[in-house]
Image (cartoon, rainbow, N blue to C red):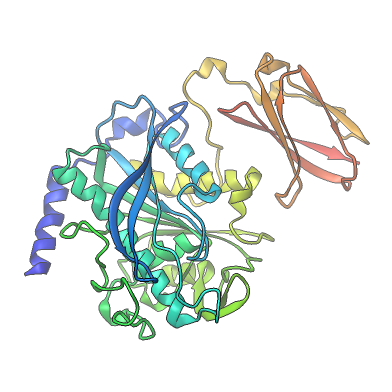
Length: 428
Protein backbone atom coordinates (compact mmCIF):
# COMPACT_ATOMS: atom_id res chain seq x y z
CA UNK A 1 0.00 0.00 0.00
CA UNK A 2 2.83 2.40 0.85
CA UNK A 3 4.42 1.87 -2.59
CA UNK A 4 1.12 2.74 -4.28
CA UNK A 5 0.86 5.93 -2.21
CA UNK A 6 4.32 7.07 -3.25
CA UNK A 7 3.53 6.31 -6.88
CA UNK A 8 0.37 8.42 -6.72
CA UNK A 9 2.33 11.25 -5.13
CA UNK A 10 5.01 11.12 -7.84
CA UNK A 11 2.42 11.13 -10.65
CA UNK A 12 0.63 14.07 -9.02
CA UNK A 13 3.82 16.15 -8.95
CA UNK A 14 4.53 15.42 -12.60
CA UNK A 15 1.04 16.52 -13.61
CA UNK A 16 0.68 19.70 -11.58
CA UNK A 17 4.23 21.09 -11.71
CA UNK A 18 5.50 22.68 -14.94
CA UNK A 19 9.09 22.42 -16.10
CA UNK A 20 11.23 25.56 -16.11
CA UNK A 21 10.20 27.07 -19.42
CA UNK A 22 12.53 27.55 -22.34
CA UNK A 23 11.50 31.20 -22.18
CA UNK A 24 13.37 31.42 -18.86
CA UNK A 25 16.46 29.93 -20.46
CA UNK A 26 16.36 32.05 -23.61
CA UNK A 27 17.53 35.26 -21.91
CA UNK A 28 20.72 33.75 -20.47
CA UNK A 29 19.13 32.59 -17.23
CA UNK A 30 20.84 29.51 -15.71
CA UNK A 31 23.96 30.32 -17.78
CA UNK A 32 25.01 33.82 -16.71
CA UNK A 33 24.39 36.10 -13.75
CA UNK A 34 21.05 37.64 -14.66
CA UNK A 35 20.58 38.99 -11.13
CA UNK A 36 23.02 41.24 -9.32
CA UNK A 37 22.32 39.85 -5.87
CA UNK A 38 20.59 37.15 -3.83
CA UNK A 39 18.00 37.13 -1.07
CA UNK A 40 18.86 34.97 1.95
CA UNK A 41 16.36 33.39 4.36
CA UNK A 42 18.18 31.65 7.20
CA UNK A 43 17.43 28.83 9.64
CA UNK A 44 14.31 27.35 8.09
CA UNK A 45 13.28 24.19 9.95
CA UNK A 46 12.89 21.21 7.65
CA UNK A 47 12.81 18.33 10.14
CA UNK A 48 14.31 16.77 13.26
CA UNK A 49 15.88 13.51 14.38
CA UNK A 50 18.00 11.82 17.03
CA UNK A 51 21.75 12.44 17.06
CA UNK A 52 24.43 9.90 17.93
CA UNK A 53 24.43 11.15 21.54
CA UNK A 54 20.68 10.41 21.86
CA UNK A 55 19.63 14.09 21.84
CA UNK A 56 17.19 15.52 19.32
CA UNK A 57 18.40 18.00 16.72
CA UNK A 58 16.12 20.42 14.88
CA UNK A 59 17.27 20.37 11.26
CA UNK A 60 17.61 23.73 9.52
CA UNK A 61 18.54 25.06 6.09
CA UNK A 62 19.21 28.43 4.47
CA UNK A 63 17.50 29.43 1.22
CA UNK A 64 19.14 31.67 -1.37
CA UNK A 65 16.81 33.18 -3.98
CA UNK A 66 17.46 35.55 -6.90
CA UNK A 67 16.75 39.03 -5.59
CA UNK A 68 13.86 40.66 -7.44
CA UNK A 69 12.87 37.52 -9.34
CA UNK A 70 9.27 37.29 -10.59
CA UNK A 71 9.32 33.70 -11.86
CA UNK A 72 7.05 31.33 -9.94
CA UNK A 73 8.48 27.94 -11.00
CA UNK A 74 12.23 27.71 -10.51
CA UNK A 75 14.73 24.84 -10.30
CA UNK A 76 16.11 24.05 -6.86
CA UNK A 77 19.63 22.99 -5.87
CA UNK A 78 20.04 21.52 -2.37
CA UNK A 79 23.68 21.55 -1.29
CA UNK A 80 25.33 19.77 1.66
CA UNK A 81 28.57 21.02 3.21
CA UNK A 82 31.74 19.11 4.06
CA UNK A 83 33.43 18.42 7.39
CA UNK A 84 33.95 14.65 7.76
CA UNK A 85 30.59 14.31 9.55
CA UNK A 86 32.11 15.84 12.67
CA UNK A 87 32.37 19.51 11.58
CA UNK A 88 31.44 22.07 8.95
CA UNK A 89 28.20 24.00 8.60
CA UNK A 90 25.61 25.25 6.14
CA UNK A 91 27.30 28.67 6.27
CA UNK A 92 30.77 27.31 5.47
CA UNK A 93 32.93 28.76 2.72
CA UNK A 94 32.85 25.47 0.80
CA UNK A 95 29.17 26.03 -0.05
CA UNK A 96 28.10 29.67 0.41
CA UNK A 97 29.87 31.09 -2.65
CA UNK A 98 28.21 28.44 -4.81
CA UNK A 99 24.82 29.21 -3.22
CA UNK A 100 25.14 32.92 -3.97
CA UNK A 101 26.40 32.47 -7.51
CA UNK A 102 23.76 29.93 -8.55
CA UNK A 103 21.07 32.17 -7.04
CA UNK A 104 22.34 35.01 -9.23
CA UNK A 105 21.97 32.68 -12.23
CA UNK A 106 18.29 32.22 -11.36
CA UNK A 107 18.24 29.05 -9.24
CA UNK A 108 16.81 28.68 -5.76
CA UNK A 109 19.57 27.15 -3.61
CA UNK A 110 19.18 25.57 -0.18
CA UNK A 111 22.23 25.01 2.02
CA UNK A 112 21.27 22.30 4.47
CA UNK A 113 22.57 21.53 7.91
CA UNK A 114 22.54 17.89 9.00
CA UNK A 115 23.33 15.78 12.05
CA UNK A 116 27.02 15.62 12.92
CA UNK A 117 28.92 13.50 15.38
CA UNK A 118 30.16 9.99 16.10
CA UNK A 119 29.94 8.17 19.40
CA UNK A 120 33.62 7.13 19.38
CA UNK A 121 35.10 10.42 18.17
CA UNK A 122 37.69 11.53 19.14
CA UNK A 123 38.36 8.71 21.62
CA UNK A 124 38.83 5.80 21.40
CA UNK A 125 38.48 6.53 17.71
CA UNK A 126 35.74 5.93 15.15
CA UNK A 127 35.56 2.97 12.79
CA UNK A 128 33.13 1.82 10.12
CA UNK A 129 30.57 0.86 12.78
CA UNK A 130 30.62 4.49 13.99
CA UNK A 131 31.28 6.43 10.78
CA UNK A 132 28.79 4.46 8.67
CA UNK A 133 25.80 5.50 10.80
CA UNK A 134 26.98 9.15 10.69
CA UNK A 135 26.78 8.96 6.91
CA UNK A 136 23.31 7.36 6.99
CA UNK A 137 22.07 10.11 9.33
CA UNK A 138 23.23 12.66 6.78
CA UNK A 139 21.58 10.69 3.98
CA UNK A 140 18.29 10.54 5.89
CA UNK A 141 18.47 14.29 6.56
CA UNK A 142 19.15 15.00 2.87
CA UNK A 143 16.07 13.02 1.89
CA UNK A 144 14.00 14.95 4.44
CA UNK A 145 15.25 18.23 2.92
CA UNK A 146 14.06 17.18 -0.54
CA UNK A 147 10.71 16.09 0.88
CA UNK A 148 10.38 19.42 2.73
CA UNK A 149 10.30 21.38 -0.52
CA UNK A 150 7.90 18.94 -2.14
CA UNK A 151 5.60 19.15 0.87
CA UNK A 152 5.80 22.95 0.86
CA UNK A 153 4.99 23.04 -2.84
CA UNK A 154 2.06 20.71 -2.33
CA UNK A 155 0.37 22.00 0.83
CA UNK A 156 2.44 24.97 2.03
CA UNK A 157 1.73 27.47 -0.72
CA UNK A 158 5.04 26.82 -2.51
CA UNK A 159 6.75 29.54 -0.49
CA UNK A 160 9.98 29.28 -2.45
CA UNK A 161 8.42 29.05 -5.95
CA UNK A 162 9.99 25.67 -6.72
CA UNK A 163 9.59 23.56 -9.86
CA UNK A 164 9.48 20.16 -8.16
CA UNK A 165 10.40 18.39 -11.40
CA UNK A 166 13.71 20.25 -11.32
CA UNK A 167 15.28 19.45 -7.96
CA UNK A 168 19.03 18.79 -7.92
CA UNK A 169 21.41 17.76 -5.16
CA UNK A 170 25.01 18.87 -4.70
CA UNK A 171 27.50 17.94 -2.02
CA UNK A 172 31.02 18.87 -1.01
CA UNK A 173 33.26 16.20 0.59
CA UNK A 174 31.02 14.68 3.31
CA UNK A 175 28.12 16.34 1.51
CA UNK A 176 29.23 14.51 -1.63
CA UNK A 177 29.04 11.24 0.33
CA UNK A 178 25.48 12.18 1.29
CA UNK A 179 24.44 12.93 -2.29
CA UNK A 180 26.03 9.80 -3.73
CA UNK A 181 24.35 7.58 -1.15
CA UNK A 182 21.00 9.31 -1.64
CA UNK A 183 21.32 8.59 -5.36
CA UNK A 184 22.69 5.04 -5.38
CA UNK A 185 22.05 3.37 -1.99
CA UNK A 186 18.46 2.87 -3.07
CA UNK A 187 17.73 -0.73 -2.08
CA UNK A 188 17.40 -2.15 1.41
CA UNK A 189 19.43 -5.16 0.24
CA UNK A 190 22.39 -2.80 -0.34
CA UNK A 191 22.27 -1.43 3.20
CA UNK A 192 25.72 -2.07 4.76
CA UNK A 193 25.73 -4.90 7.30
CA UNK A 194 28.06 -2.99 9.64
CA UNK A 195 25.36 -0.36 10.28
CA UNK A 196 23.25 -1.36 13.28
CA UNK A 197 19.97 0.52 12.95
CA UNK A 198 18.85 -0.63 16.39
CA UNK A 199 21.87 0.00 18.62
CA UNK A 200 22.87 3.21 16.82
CA UNK A 201 20.63 6.22 17.43
CA UNK A 202 18.49 7.99 14.86
CA UNK A 203 18.74 5.41 12.07
CA UNK A 204 15.19 4.10 11.90
CA UNK A 205 13.00 4.29 8.83
CA UNK A 206 15.00 2.18 6.41
CA UNK A 207 16.33 3.91 3.28
CA UNK A 208 14.09 6.98 3.69
CA UNK A 209 14.72 7.60 7.40
CA UNK A 210 12.61 9.47 9.93
CA UNK A 211 13.97 13.01 9.68
CA UNK A 212 10.71 14.56 8.55
CA UNK A 213 8.06 15.18 5.89
CA UNK A 214 6.94 11.57 5.34
CA UNK A 215 4.75 10.71 2.38
CA UNK A 216 6.58 12.84 -0.17
CA UNK A 217 9.18 11.66 -2.72
CA UNK A 218 12.85 12.24 -1.89
CA UNK A 219 14.22 11.72 -5.39
CA UNK A 220 16.00 14.38 -7.41
CA UNK A 221 16.93 14.81 -11.06
CA UNK A 222 20.75 14.84 -11.06
CA UNK A 223 23.71 15.05 -8.69
CA UNK A 224 26.84 17.20 -8.43
CA UNK A 225 29.51 15.46 -6.34
CA UNK A 226 32.49 17.59 -5.33
CA UNK A 227 35.18 15.34 -3.84
CA UNK A 228 32.90 12.80 -2.15
CA UNK A 229 32.85 9.00 -2.32
CA UNK A 230 30.45 6.05 -2.34
CA UNK A 231 30.52 2.97 -0.14
CA UNK A 232 30.36 0.66 -3.16
CA UNK A 233 30.16 1.74 -6.81
CA UNK A 234 28.47 -1.60 -7.57
CA UNK A 235 25.31 0.00 -6.18
CA UNK A 236 25.13 2.10 -9.37
CA UNK A 237 22.77 0.48 -11.87
CA UNK A 238 21.66 1.26 -15.41
CA UNK A 239 18.99 3.94 -15.36
CA UNK A 240 20.22 5.53 -12.12
CA UNK A 241 20.61 9.28 -11.64
CA UNK A 242 22.98 11.37 -13.79
CA UNK A 243 26.05 12.62 -11.96
CA UNK A 244 28.84 15.17 -12.27
CA UNK A 245 31.95 14.09 -10.33
CA UNK A 246 34.82 16.52 -9.63
CA UNK A 247 37.88 15.49 -7.61
CA UNK A 248 41.56 16.30 -7.10
CA UNK A 249 43.82 13.41 -8.05
CA UNK A 250 46.10 14.27 -5.10
CA UNK A 251 43.27 14.28 -2.55
CA UNK A 252 44.62 13.20 0.85
CA UNK A 253 41.25 13.35 2.62
CA UNK A 254 38.83 11.44 0.37
CA UNK A 255 40.27 8.88 -2.07
CA UNK A 256 40.25 9.88 -5.73
CA UNK A 257 39.79 6.21 -6.67
CA UNK A 258 39.09 3.14 -4.54
CA UNK A 259 41.01 3.11 -1.27
CA UNK A 260 40.81 3.09 2.51
CA UNK A 261 39.51 6.38 3.88
CA UNK A 262 40.91 7.78 7.14
CA UNK A 263 38.91 10.30 9.16
CA UNK A 264 40.99 13.52 9.48
CA UNK A 265 43.88 11.47 8.06
CA UNK A 266 44.13 9.56 11.34
CA UNK A 267 41.37 7.03 11.95
CA UNK A 268 41.04 4.23 9.36
CA UNK A 269 37.38 3.78 8.51
CA UNK A 270 36.61 1.60 5.49
CA UNK A 271 37.22 1.09 1.79
CA UNK A 272 35.31 3.57 -0.39
CA UNK A 273 35.01 4.39 -4.08
CA UNK A 274 35.97 7.97 -4.89
CA UNK A 275 34.93 10.04 -7.88
CA UNK A 276 37.21 8.27 -10.37
CA UNK A 277 35.67 4.89 -9.53
CA UNK A 278 32.13 6.30 -9.45
CA UNK A 279 32.64 7.86 -12.88
CA UNK A 280 34.02 4.61 -14.27
CA UNK A 281 30.98 2.68 -13.02
CA UNK A 282 28.62 5.38 -14.33
CA UNK A 283 30.20 5.01 -17.77
CA UNK A 284 29.93 1.23 -17.57
CA UNK A 285 26.22 1.48 -16.72
CA UNK A 286 25.57 4.03 -19.46
CA UNK A 287 24.56 6.87 -17.14
CA UNK A 288 24.59 10.47 -18.29
CA UNK A 289 27.61 11.81 -16.44
CA UNK A 290 30.56 14.19 -16.47
CA UNK A 291 33.90 13.79 -14.72
CA UNK A 292 36.47 16.50 -14.01
CA UNK A 293 39.86 15.81 -12.47
CA UNK A 294 41.63 18.68 -10.73
CA UNK A 295 45.12 17.56 -11.72
CA UNK A 296 47.70 18.04 -8.98
CA UNK A 297 45.09 19.30 -6.52
CA UNK A 298 44.25 18.18 -2.99
CA UNK A 299 40.83 18.17 -1.30
CA UNK A 300 37.99 20.56 -2.34
CA UNK A 301 40.24 22.93 -4.32
CA UNK A 302 37.30 25.15 -5.28
CA UNK A 303 36.99 26.38 -1.69
CA UNK A 304 40.19 28.42 -2.13
CA UNK A 305 38.59 30.55 -4.84
CA UNK A 306 40.41 31.57 -7.99
CA UNK A 307 40.83 29.34 -11.02
CA UNK A 308 39.60 26.15 -9.37
CA UNK A 309 36.42 27.81 -8.10
CA UNK A 310 35.75 29.26 -11.54
CA UNK A 311 36.25 25.82 -13.11
CA UNK A 312 33.87 24.22 -10.61
CA UNK A 313 31.22 26.88 -11.15
CA UNK A 314 31.37 26.75 -14.96
CA UNK A 315 31.34 22.96 -15.34
CA UNK A 316 28.57 22.60 -12.73
CA UNK A 317 26.60 25.27 -14.58
CA UNK A 318 27.05 23.45 -17.90
CA UNK A 319 25.98 20.12 -16.39
CA UNK A 320 22.83 21.50 -14.74
CA UNK A 321 21.88 23.61 -17.74
CA UNK A 322 21.62 20.43 -19.80
CA UNK A 323 18.74 19.23 -17.62
CA UNK A 324 17.09 22.57 -16.89
CA UNK A 325 17.20 24.05 -20.40
CA UNK A 326 17.64 21.00 -22.63
CA UNK A 327 20.93 22.21 -24.14
CA UNK A 328 23.50 19.61 -25.28
CA UNK A 329 25.56 18.16 -22.45
CA UNK A 330 28.96 19.86 -22.20
CA UNK A 331 31.36 18.43 -19.62
CA UNK A 332 34.17 20.88 -20.38
CA UNK A 333 35.13 24.31 -19.18
CA UNK A 334 33.59 26.84 -21.58
CA UNK A 335 32.94 30.56 -21.20
CA UNK A 336 32.99 31.97 -17.66
CA UNK A 337 29.82 33.06 -15.91
CA UNK A 338 29.38 36.81 -16.47
CA UNK A 339 26.98 39.48 -15.28
CA UNK A 340 24.31 39.87 -17.93
CA UNK A 341 22.26 42.69 -16.38
CA UNK A 342 23.55 46.19 -17.01
CA UNK A 343 25.48 44.97 -20.06
CA UNK A 344 26.45 48.54 -20.95
CA UNK A 345 28.59 48.61 -17.80
CA UNK A 346 30.58 45.49 -18.63
CA UNK A 347 34.26 45.98 -19.39
CA UNK A 348 35.98 44.44 -22.36
CA UNK A 349 38.99 42.45 -21.24
CA UNK A 350 41.06 44.20 -23.91
CA UNK A 351 40.65 47.41 -21.89
CA UNK A 352 42.69 45.88 -19.05
CA UNK A 353 46.32 46.17 -20.13
CA UNK A 354 49.30 44.75 -18.24
CA UNK A 355 52.68 46.27 -19.16
CA UNK A 356 55.44 45.44 -19.63
CA UNK A 357 54.54 41.83 -20.28
CA UNK A 358 56.78 39.84 -19.94
CA UNK A 359 58.19 41.73 -16.96
CA UNK A 360 61.35 41.35 -14.93
CA UNK A 361 60.41 42.67 -11.49
CA UNK A 362 57.34 44.90 -11.78
CA UNK A 363 54.34 45.35 -14.08
CA UNK A 364 51.53 47.91 -14.20
CA UNK A 365 47.87 46.86 -14.46
CA UNK A 366 45.74 49.55 -16.12
CA UNK A 367 42.49 49.80 -14.13
CA UNK A 368 41.17 53.01 -15.66
CA UNK A 369 38.24 51.18 -17.28
CA UNK A 370 36.76 50.58 -13.81
CA UNK A 371 36.40 54.38 -13.28
CA UNK A 372 37.58 54.25 -9.66
CA UNK A 373 35.17 51.46 -8.68
CA UNK A 374 36.90 49.34 -5.99
CA UNK A 375 38.39 46.10 -7.30
CA UNK A 376 40.31 43.17 -5.88
CA UNK A 377 43.26 41.54 -7.61
CA UNK A 378 44.16 37.89 -7.17
CA UNK A 379 47.35 36.36 -8.57
CA UNK A 380 47.35 32.60 -9.20
CA UNK A 381 50.24 30.37 -10.23
CA UNK A 382 50.09 27.75 -12.99
CA UNK A 383 48.81 25.13 -10.49
CA UNK A 384 45.86 27.29 -9.46
CA UNK A 385 47.33 28.36 -6.11
CA UNK A 386 46.76 31.89 -4.85
CA UNK A 387 50.13 33.63 -4.42
CA UNK A 388 48.97 37.22 -3.91
CA UNK A 389 45.74 39.06 -3.14
CA UNK A 390 44.85 42.72 -2.63
CA UNK A 391 41.44 44.37 -2.32
CA UNK A 392 39.69 47.76 -2.33
CA UNK A 393 41.87 49.24 -5.07
CA UNK A 394 40.36 52.44 -6.49
CA UNK A 395 43.35 53.91 -8.34
CA UNK A 396 43.63 53.94 -12.13
CA UNK A 397 46.55 51.52 -12.08
CA UNK A 398 48.22 49.01 -9.79
CA UNK A 399 51.87 48.04 -9.52
CA UNK A 400 52.26 44.26 -9.47
CA UNK A 401 55.66 43.13 -8.19
CA UNK A 402 57.38 39.79 -8.67
CA UNK A 403 58.88 39.70 -5.18
CA UNK A 404 59.99 36.17 -4.29
CA UNK A 405 57.94 34.50 -7.00
CA UNK A 406 59.58 32.11 -9.41
CA UNK A 407 59.79 32.96 -13.08
CA UNK A 408 56.83 31.75 -15.13
CA UNK A 409 53.23 32.42 -16.14
CA UNK A 410 50.77 33.79 -13.56
CA UNK A 411 47.04 34.41 -13.93
CA UNK A 412 45.42 37.64 -12.78
CA UNK A 413 41.78 37.70 -11.59
CA UNK A 414 40.32 41.20 -11.21
CA UNK A 415 36.92 41.37 -9.50
CA UNK A 416 34.63 44.40 -9.17
CA UNK A 417 32.14 42.47 -7.00
CA UNK A 418 29.91 41.46 -9.89
CA UNK A 419 32.31 40.14 -12.52
CA UNK A 420 35.76 38.60 -12.65
CA UNK A 421 38.06 39.69 -15.48
CA UNK A 422 41.05 37.51 -16.30
CA UNK A 423 44.41 38.13 -17.87
CA UNK A 424 47.97 36.89 -17.34
CA UNK A 425 51.50 38.06 -16.68
CA UNK A 426 54.84 36.42 -17.44
CA UNK A 427 57.61 37.11 -14.94
CA UNK A 428 61.08 36.41 -16.33
